[in-house]
Image (cartoon, rainbow, N blue to C red):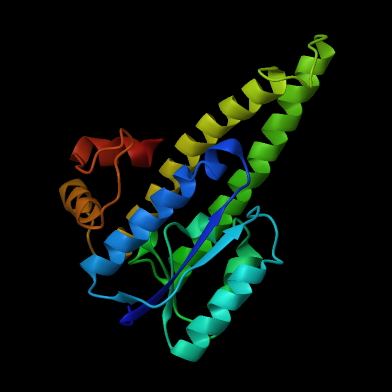
Length: 217
């Protein structure tokens, strides 16, 4: 990572994000990463927009500033850039170095795979939500009020999505580790810990049996 770092954070306009929780978490991850790698933050760009949209003015400004200042564009998580494979691919060819703190050691190939996984998961979330709403409507459930079936369906879909995406992303990282020559379960577990990848239980430590279960899932 180059010494100058220019963080870009994106949040959606929901009550939780307005409270600043999503923004604060991203800033904390970026700040910790910069301190760990001896970088210097030279600016910051905050976008309040859905990851599905590609017309993001703050991202455009961040890319321009990073290009002019020869800085590395830094994001807390890859999906804060986008859940769209073509968007990530275009960004990788934009002539600006960028690093996702959650995938700091990922190669270009790995980033492409992770973006494809995120894009597929976003599509599946949308499909599950539509199916749940259609089923609720068929049962005569009234939609459109707080605490209704739509909210419940989205909550269930979000939980399922989080688990599925976390496992899929970690599997991609494991494959990257294997390609580097580490093939044993013990070795893979140690590399996952060194990279800061969380276990399915959310812990910073890994056991060989957890790696085995992940690969068998």
